Image (cartoon, rainbow, N blue to C red; front, side, top):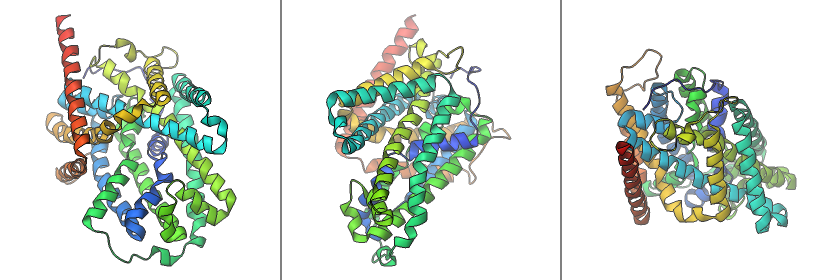
Length: 432
């Protein structure tokens, strides 16, 4: 990595970064997740949430340590590149950007579908494309003109998406039947593993939320603190939401696969509750997109900054706004094109394993950085030696073992293709 003082403004504090992480993690998933988990585990699904929360906490401890040792913009790319060099950083960066672009395409199309259910005009192709163009270009503009504007929008979206969920949790207890929460039999290890794998993907997003580390005030303390606050809050919120949905709808919950929370709110508040949670789902999706277009262009910026990709323009920082404006514009353009054409479907197989591979790289980077860098007094270090990193590796390998043969083959092919591309880039730079 090229160590140099970046021109970004450090304006993001604990609250802003916590909101950023929560905004990215709480996307569209939680609005459909309760029915999916309940279908396989029933009332015992709350155990899967607790189990997955513990597993995620171990991995996030590794993120917290890595973020306190490497504070430049780039997030997981920067951690892996610092520990293992440009080739590993290149793979991590591309996997991260690819996975997030696919997620953006899927969520933006889901947002159009929600609007289409409210008004048929959004089902028209031209309106769908126009709406996607407005969303991606508008979010790009907000994030180009300044990090304060971008993080400000994220804070607003986070609060807006949390309000309907908190209303559901606070007022839903009166409609809960304890009989619906009675666990008749505990899940098997196989059931728990399958449900936890689904839930694990719903908890993803922290890796995107901390990409803005180069714009965080006192990152060695702020980032670990924000990770702990956001992950703890999300685990508790998810468990409460699942409890309310299960307690209100009982055995009928798996039948509402499209709108489990809106259907729960319909019982609690009447028809207005259904509308509130449906609008909340739309806000949540928009908030997810706003967070991704704030965070993920900075991975493109970091790849260009370290000359891992030979596109120096992506590393340019705006002289007035102090933002990586070209990276933001290119990222938003790619997101729009993938969303508008729907071509993301052919790459979903690769995307499903890409983030897990990146997580594995971060955990291994933590171990390597402990032995290659001197620890400083203000850095966060996970207590217990290598216990947490080793457990995290075991967890990630367990999840990877559940991938299908096609997913494994797709991942292997993508790594081979990226390796060839990296080799071509490397040799072209060597000749110059």
